[in-house]
Image 1 (cartoon, rainbow, N blue to C red):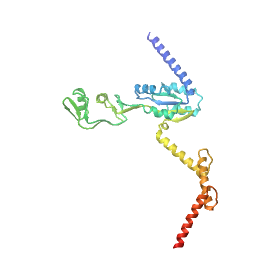
Image 2: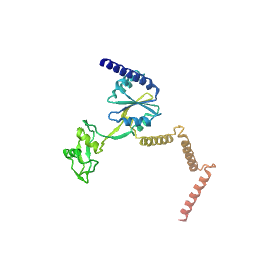
Image 3: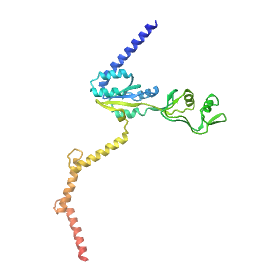
Image 4: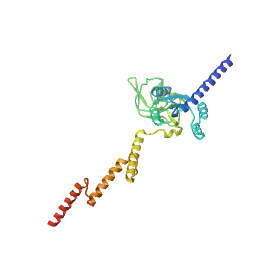
Length: 291
């Protein structure tokens, strides 16, 4: 009986993988953008919140790396792009399909983050400090843990106070079950549960994850500055592009007017300025004669 159950489970899993593969192969060419995000350590609630918020804009699907790798192989992407994509597939991932810009999508995904507790027997990427002050603890087994860890405390009116900030786990060290339980009881969640931007494809262009985390406001400022510089250069060099033409014509008109005034050429536009220039010159000459 047990082998039949195992066989049935195997067949179901195999069929599930095939359905996922077919889904991925069908979806990859349908969308302008594809993104792979790391979800290792990300709480399920964070993934669900992202799905809900991006509904209608993007689809998030948790995938096995082997299945996604096979789906990539079945696409018509260039071999170098396929290779670059597959080298980034490690740990737990989800794939995101969207027709929006992957950069704006990345900015939205990075907003989904929460503080997270450290799980037992995991190493911590940060120093873990128990801060001074009142705690939600009651005298009992957990205060015994405070004593065992060398965390100075005192009890006042049945409230437990930590006397000073105390480092309990250094960055890179493993957090044992006792410390993990204590940190949760103290509501100390030093980790950040957030997506890792691994890679993206936009209109067939491969973009590594580290290029996706763009400060959009800074990017817009830089883009505006670059546009202004390019426009100024076009005007100064007289390059007849659409944006520069009104400014080039205006500058040429000013230069022509200045030249006409300097040469004493009379026209409807230059006459008032030539007269003013003549009057100024006459006044200056008059002052010299008086002297």
